[in-house]
Image 1 (tube, rainbow, N blue to C red):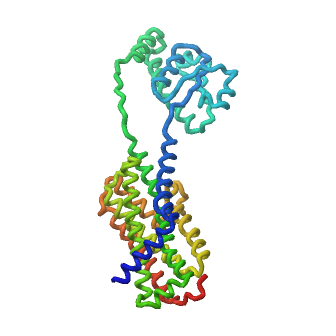
Image 2: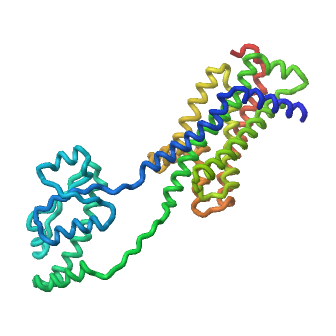
Image 3: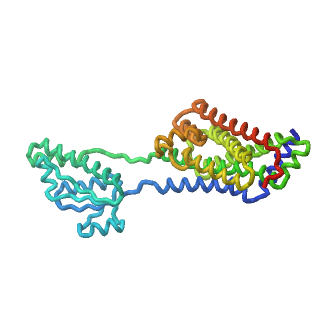
Length: 381
């Protein structure tokens, strides 16, 4: 045990002698979290600038423009049709609604004309506008139908409709769904950097193989198993400190509500960190050079993070890739977090944790076997 403790102290000392490792373990994860928050903050819904070209000029068409204004999602601008294209191309308006001639009369005659909606924002915006306008038109159409062609009766009902005594209390509601998306996205970046950090820790074995330190240690009264165990424990200690610091940063500095108890998030991320060390050990055990180790790491970490849903939701991927994502441990981490966010407990993610533990066990067993069968390190470069 004394040998293992001494080895752990030496590994930590050598690891953090290189100041660049502080960037990998702390600065890069913070940058990843900040980037994720910035991307979601930039996606906040903003009022659309809506241009209206009214060829009718009737009270109903003017009231429709006021209805868009009252919705609070639009800034209304009256346009001349001659300058329509210029406004759209310059971006001074997001979309334009063209009200045709005799629009009000078409409603009186029970055959409402169709509005023309022009936008460069995409079909989603046009559909949203059309749905909003159809609600207003449908209400006025029902009044016209109820008046049975009597315009005076229609005017009275329309006056009552426009002057209805409804009070609207506006309050602010936090978008918890968005905060959950920020949390999952931030954790996706964090997972990738945990894997990168764990791989750098295990690469200590490669460096000591290259300079023959590993060979000298194994010649001393220290077995290769003790040396590998010391590396695993040192990496685990680094992961624990890293996870604690990053949870504190997320909660105290960025004030991100994770909707999951901190200790449960700590358990999930720490278990994944141990798994990441297993991945690093597996890479090192199959590598015969530093170059080969770096290549394997690049081929494993980034693609599995992509497939596991770290950069985007797996729901956006084809069905075949969604099924394949279950073979990625990252998928089980993010699923566990989402399950607890939706009201689950740590018991509800016992299967997820068990699968992560199984992944880690397999990686460590294969790595240990590979190390035990390749003790000749004298040709390592």
